[in-house]
Length: 210
Image 1 (cartoon, helix red, strand yellow):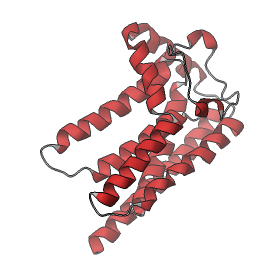
Image 2 (cartoon, helix red, strand yellow; image 1 turned 45 degrees about the vertical axis):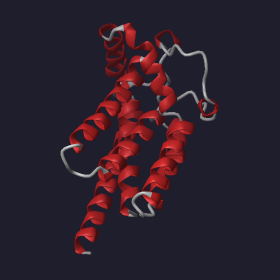
Image 3 (cartoon, one colour; image 1 turned 135 degrees about the horizontal axis):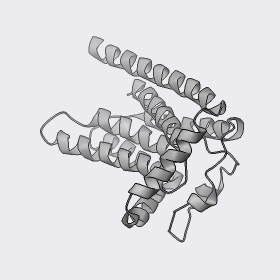
Image 4 (cartoon, helix red, strand yellow; image 1 turned 180 degrees about the vertical axis):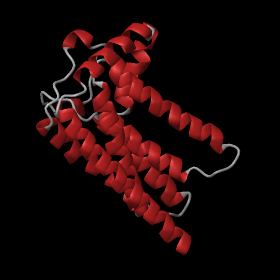
């Protein structure tokens, strides 16, 4: 019992720390101190990354869409409920990402990358991509949702020999999601860092209610 309480406290502490880091980082982004770094990072990413990743990276945009991530969240919930006999309602705190993402894209002055840097190659978009339409791009919702799922999945993976492969897979997908947002010209580096902080904070908060 004490161990569980200690775990919840550590999750809550991590969530608060990451959220405060997100707020401070958002204020830094608003002051426009990352403009040159963001641009140079995107140009370098597109210059030194092979175009062969255009389609798989664009597909990652679909994977981290609101529709698909909500499906993944629901499947995790059902798996834990029916296979592990564990009711994990905290996972639905995932929805907290949306109002904070919208606030950021309304209040944080951070213009989107220009269209000439856009490299998304698929011929369709899911409906959610048209919901949050502002002139600003901070934070990255795709990265926030991916970070949330990564934190939750890493927490529920059992530590054993096979866990190494699972952990590696989760971290690899998270890395490629981070890279793809910049390479595709969908988000600046600072947008993606903001999404990583926001999603991780929400993920740890959900674990408080494990």
